[in-house]
Length: 230
Image 1 (cartoon, rainbow, N blue to C red):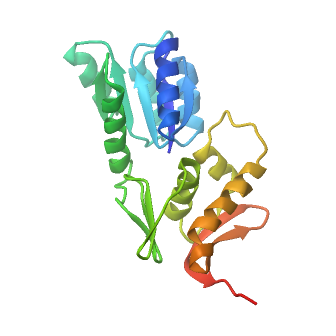
Image 2 (spheres, rainbow, N blue to C red):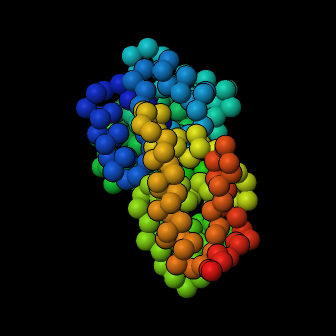
């Protein structure tokens, strides 16, 4: 899950960034309205957390501009204002929910989970690819009757592959989904994590569902070929 946090207050933005990363989100942070408009227009996010009080253009204007640019990501507005009018303005501009400051971080996470389930389009509660079941809400994975334990990065990669089952997903898409725009490490880390994933969801079951698309990325196949043993 990739999230854009738009918050100019350094302590609040650092808290949100750290907390969301710990909850396995890939996080980009914008500290100004203009920066937020650029991110929201150029990058496809799963969700946006938007403060209304920004130093240059206000959050409502940011929201109007990113919606005009075609962003369909659910938007959770954060506001310290008590005025009903501000909330109405935000919702009218295209926000999906709002949360008043100060807020409990657990409530923020619960709101984000609810919004991402609803999403720009209705998200399935479970993604089924052949006999593999991926549940984004509980982050659980099963193949047949077997539960499979994955790390957060492994789950993020599998979720994107499963959502696009039978379609090739580029290396860049996978890196951006499981890491974020700040990732500037060796992209071979992706191959390492795909290998870990295969060791967990394919090897023990004698199948080969994750396919390498040479020069591009990876694909999760609905029809799994079975590994041959010599």
